[in-house]
Length: 235
Image (cartoon, rainbow, N blue to C red):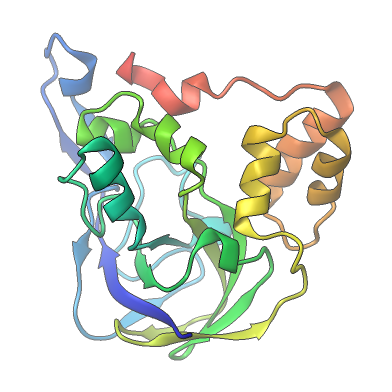
């Protein structure tokens, strides 16, 4: 089965909403989640795709989160389960909309060739409050996290041009035990299993921020409170 790039999305941050809105969900906010599909070739650089950008550079973008990928199949789940039909490909803020490629199929450290680029899986996406704000459902980010339909990030090992319709060819898989699905389970579900947290933190190819979070859990027994990330200013 081919792992296919169905569409490519990019976009610069923009500000939407109303400053004085009574409802937090309607207030002004700025984000790079609003992406548009592009046609033709696009350059994949070390920190992002050409023409792409993030508003919150502390938590988004950079070498470990250069390219965000999301399975297109997940949108039908949110349509059917929650009636969120406004959610369409690109809605999660992904750069690559992928077909036939799910969290159970992808592992940390997987290196793929696509066009002239070489990209490597670095971490699952941990959804923040912004998808919820965009689609006006306060618990949406929690639903994304609990469903395991998070998508994942790539770091860029070799820059190059890519375009929609290309396939991703697996070049190496150094950590087959650490699928994105397994990583999500360790981080968000089986929080009391310190041994598994330590094992995942020791994975050479895992992004540094995930390593830090897991090592804190191992050393201090602190699993953290995700409420700020999931709900933020939407409360």
